[in-house]
Image (cartoon, rainbow, N blue to C red):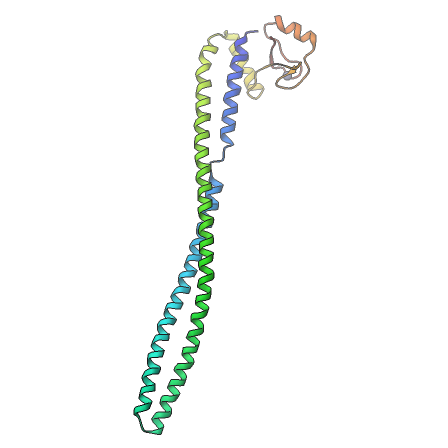
Length: 228
Ligand SMILES: [Zn+2]
């Protein structure tokens, strides 16, 4: 049997392996999706924090206005003489004071929530950073591995023509038929006394025959069998 048949098979198997390996590479899509989810979560938390900050700012403004008003009414109490006016002003001051208490409470709650949210934002920023680094790393690895495998395939493909040149027409026909029939492996060889493709034991008789036969085959799978 023509040794070039096995050589061609070894090249084609190497091409198949590299192609399969390439198709299994992680291109970083899952890591990008995780990053996207974390970014969405972070944006949401930042929005919550902004809402709380706005609530606090408004309450602080209202508090300042209420205090100014209280001071003004207190001064007015000193200047008016009618009992009716005095009691009206005192009722007003009382109402404003109650409002001031409520605003104080609102501000305290907002400060508390703001602190919690600030911590949450910091934590989520860290998570986004880690997830982004991971996605970028996977993508870089994917790129490097893809280039490597493409190079390997190109190299093996370049080696094919000189090997094919050594084949007869019948060799070529047998090879391409076997290639189609046996899932891309037309030629097997003996490995530890067995067929490298199907694992069937190669009997000594077959071995002896194979050395001289033009197209020896494995009794197990029917592939062409190369014997040294
Ligand atoms: Zn076999």
